[in-house]
Length: 387
Image (cartoon, rainbow, N blue to C red):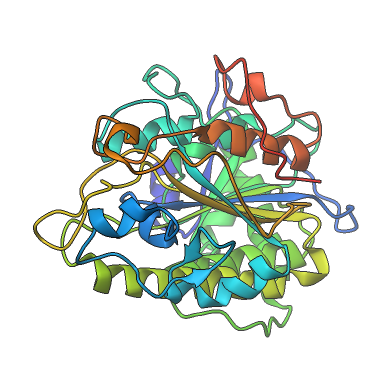
């Protein structure tokens, strides 16, 4: 029985990378461990159109660039920006000064390739293809006895952002995290291979931890959408106090080359409802739990001939919880006049995404260092997002 066959016949996927065997680091977890601060990153894959999500209705060039797809009924935020109406569930959170937005934010790398841009953002090293680990993995400290579920990636495979020397787990659901055949436990226990035996033992420790969570009733309501259900699973781990420190979830479908208004209405309805449900569920822990959203790049300022937009540059990010000072749109607005656009076609970047992530992670993770998390980035410019 080898690891590949074991994983094939189970719903467990645990990962570690490094010079020594780190498929799963040895872990001991105390049930009465103190509450952890948690950082949750949500990736909007496909390049969301930030200009139609956080609408610059105060810029006269906005409507002129988008005669057919401009959002005309945005929910006003500050007289200049407004939220897409499908994000109405987030408006009360913003008004309560619990949701912050950063606009004209993105990567300094000019690529318009989804694959490269996502890779650079998840590695935290724009333009550098040689970096193998991810920023969220590097953000983790190295305690002597970490929880086996301290770092969780929602889905069937480990997100790029969580790859690295610290062990992490890929998880679809708490209820599905199990080994389906008890014979495997005996086979692992009997193995003479120390690495395989240790890995098997620790895997079953994680399974038993999940079993204890499943026995606890959980009544909070979440949308029956992929993102909604991912956030539900993360919420269950947080409320169970099993040592979760970082989590990663994503939502695809944001590549709106054609018929953008209808697509964006559907996507943002799901997105807003999921975030609002999680925010409501976390109210008793909102100071310890921080959520940040991101996308690989934005979209063209001018609409195309198919009532859509093409690959662009800067975008918008959301953040709430964890001491975030909400009720404000952060960052310098570059403008949408022809001479203000990046390469005369895209929203220009005035805030590096590493400034946003760096500020949040150093607040949430004890001992975190921007220079370590984002190697080669030596001059971060924090926006004052957290108190």
